[in-house]
Length: 133
Image 1 (spheres, helix red, strand yellow):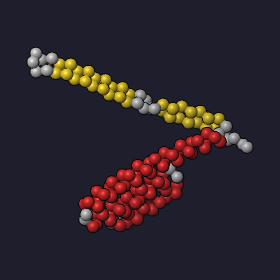
Image 2 (cartoon, rainbow, N blue to C red):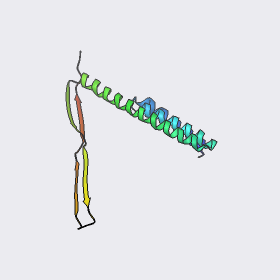
Image 3 (cartoon, helix red, strand yellow):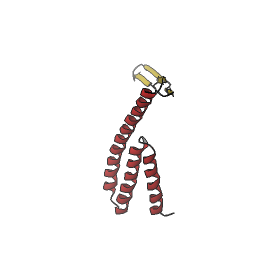
């Protein structure tokens, strides 16, 4: 399969994903634009254009990620609002590291401290029933 055929299949798959869910849509659009722009830049052979495009796509992907998170939170809020019974259980990950060190050349003194901590993340939502207005 040549590059052009692969791009056509890729484009159709991304469009289908974008239509499937509003959460995937923004990210899928960025992926599609990125693939097209990278292909155009690589065919022209200009490395600076590829670098500039990579930076632009990084910013676009970051924005799409934020939009997807907002869409997800809105969808969850809508389900909470319309559910008869809601159970929410959330835990968030927290990691921490610390360190210290001292050494001397004279009488050979050395001190070193270290620490590390981790917390488990868990996010569970259960929606049952539907409020009937």
